[in-house]
Amino acid sequence: MTPKFSIFIAVSLDGFIARPDGDLDWLDAVQVAGEDYGYHAFFDSVDAVLLGSGTYGTVRTFPEWPYGDKPCYVATSQALRPVHHEVFVRGNPVELARTLNERGHDRVYVDGAALIRSFLATNLVNDLTLSVVPVLLGSGIPLFRERGKEPAYQEHGLRALGSHTYPSGLVQLKYEKLKSV
Image (cartoon, rainbow, N blue to C red; front, side, top):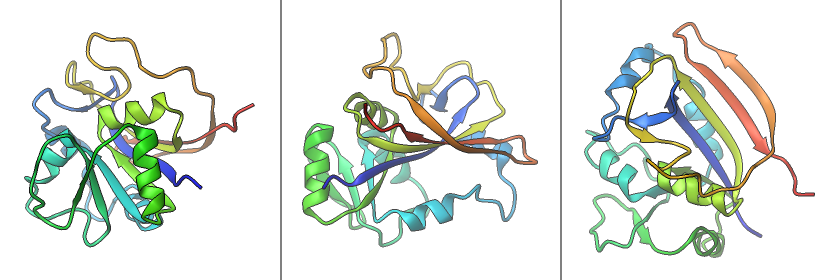
């Protein structure tokens, strides 16, 4: 059985997950003491993390490793040395799903724009939580469309699970994939 693949990501109102250089400073606009927008509950619900190489490059610079002891896989073709306990994996989303299944994972947090798009292209994303931050970046790393290209995925029907507006202005949208017909 294939693990469930889940997305939990912040996005600017105009669809970017980071500035062109990968900077996330724009997220400071919604940083509120004691508010994690449901991230910890989500993170507790997954048993592994799968990162794209760009996202991995960003989180490696954080003062603290954000994933604790949770198994963390990095999809990359580069020969890298782990800084923590991360495991480097290669392959397309179907091959990665097989690898994570063989390692006994049930629900995997997928992070990184290109990796998310590739999982959407193979219809492997089970649920998405999008935290829309009230800022227009104008440019950056787009979530759903690679710069200057059409989306690599086909139309996907989703079922809304809920939405919530926070005092900071952040609007969180939760969806699950519709069952194939």
